[in-house]
Image 1 (cartoon, rainbow, N blue to C red):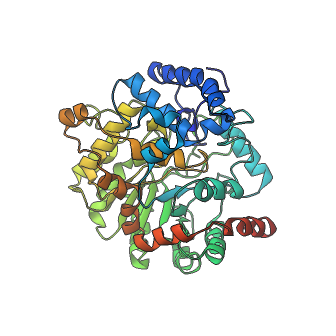
Image 2: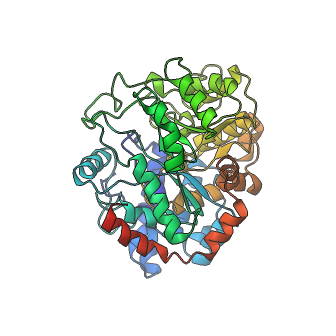
Image 3: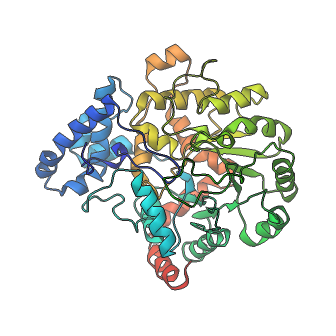
Length: 465
């Protein structure tokens, strides 16, 4: 493929600074070629610019229909006319579901930081041409794009703002104060509840555990975000690992992890939001510590961000004894080994994981099927990891349309992905674990004319948050 694939965002090879996007396989490449061939004539037929067509629901439907054809199974339930008729596309993707996105990001306006980080991301992905409406420029990781991608062009009712760890020189995409400040800004202009925030904790950094009470009171986090891989490396994509050696730790280690969990329990901020996976398969990126900690701390919720998925590692197939130590299976193994049954205190989060799996639908069926079996329909949680992937609506729409085909359900015992289960994953499960009133959240989003976003952007540009 050329470096300018004229395709919908769901088919593009995008990534963050945390992983290298894998190349297209033959089936994906065949789907891309069919979509490319159909794009310009369809856009002309509809009298729409090609970029507008691909970034619309029509473009999403086209990409998903081609994936069905190439993988020879009805993974996505979409009528053929949804490629050409907006009403058909809207109907195919319609639902009354509450959408809560528990993993969202943007980058503060620190120019050297943004330029270098954006260059690293660009080095790991295909770039889009100027007309593309998804993620067009190195500056498109900032607050204005965050408002557009998470609120203006998405049905997301509530988003949780989080951040990666700083690099080894202490440079942040967003500091904890900026996470909370962004939430306070939106609270003041939009009313409370549209945005919540994490606080990022590094238990192996002196003073962090002592500061947690102050963080709780001043920053009002809904969860503690932790990265057991440690700090980010500061030398860019040439480095063997993106994690800085000597800064790693684990949740179940006696020196750092256990004291952190004890402190979280004392402070009654019970959500432990641990990045697991997308680690380059470094040892401390494994979720093997989740099971022992969930067993030892039943009052805490262990929300496993990315679910242990390693984006460009081995394919995600069914859980087997031979693959129990790979990818998402590591999370299932640690839960089984420690007697954590479905519906208990381990939650599997889908940020980036789902984006990567959209164009790998067989793997998507295995991942959702085995997560539902291992953790239950109440313990799989929606997240997107955007703004890195542009507007979140195409990911939401693809999930709404996705099914686990009957032949896979029969062979592996996976549950049917019903509308009830999808509603839980898209929002209701997060509403419980994060303490969000689902009815009020939907009412608030329905009443919102989003006029506050313009004022939020003006104030952010004036004050920095």
